[in-house]
Length: 391
Image 1 (cartoon, rainbow, N blue to C red):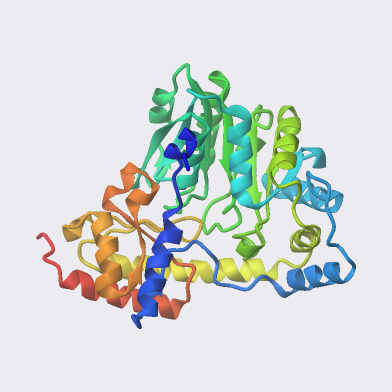
Image 2: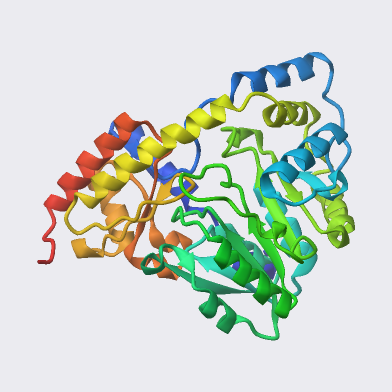
């Protein structure tokens, strides 16, 4: 069967492929520590699960309104107004199947064939994949360890052309854990307004922050009218399998998001939306405890990696990833990650899974127990010790 030409440009998310390789090894009896998937290893908080169960018992199993239930849209608007620092009208909130739904609808609605979209490099690979799928041209914005994994705003400005339509930012970031400062975001806002750019601001890790403040780009003057805010429940509430995301969009995009939702998924399941209301309005103790544990894991893995000759690792300010430079071992990131899995039983991702800048890097997710992180560090140290590390 002949595939449509657009399928030639669609990419993938390497973490799932790496996890499959690791599971294949485990099926053969090999012990593997999984540090490849960006999924909290905590259970969804009990009050959220119980709210879903109650909703099912009440018969909340029928179609929901396509933008989301009024209760959830109101809860999201109130939470975003309080946490993100700008007034959010529930009519501008759209509940989606995961955060990827927000990416898809924003790019479908705004990017024509030939348009350029500035995407972070390293960055979540689906940004680039969806831009190509829509016929756009992704333009990498280098994000380097030497700059604390923050984009260089002068370099960003130099990449804007008359064909640039959209900019994608992600803070705290996957894969680096880097966080943009308020000054960075103010400079980005000036560039966006000067060149009339739409911005997709991926804030899915906004509450998993260890230092500094989370600043929503949409809270800056003049930016709510040109920013699509992406957020959701997967990371903050350990609800990855629930597939619940949401967008806060400018009024001018409400029609487009609504039509795209109707044409793709119709709506998100009703009982899950009831559970999401409880997640936002109920106790937040489980979130606070999870972030505190992630902080401890971050310090454990950063200190452990920096003690291994040939590896340098910055201490991330947010999310639950580290993106160490392994070039001092004499290996590029892709070879390091591949050999680390098959020779040491530690599953990580090559930095090039996130763009060209990461050629000397690998990504570890520390969404695993401290015990398993210690095992991974011991195995990594032993693996590196067996290499001929350049003096």
